[in-house]
Length: 81
Image (cartoon, rainbow, N blue to C red; front, side, top):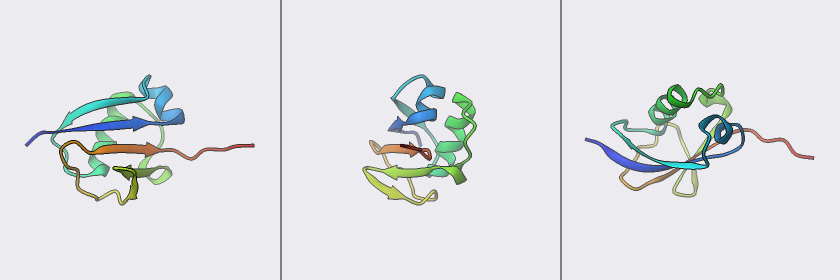
């Protein structure tokens, strides 16, 4: 069963995807599988272990299930000065 989710990209992920966000129709069931599918599509280098994931504005585990209409954010490490 396919669901639609909105995915937000930040920093290097935004650069690789060439967009800040996109609506994705997918059959995957959790955040880890969504990351893997989008990493393959957009070619970003960062593995899951280097990222945080948030679902609907709250940090989540990679095995968190996805639901129709969820907002998913993949958050890479950032540096500042």
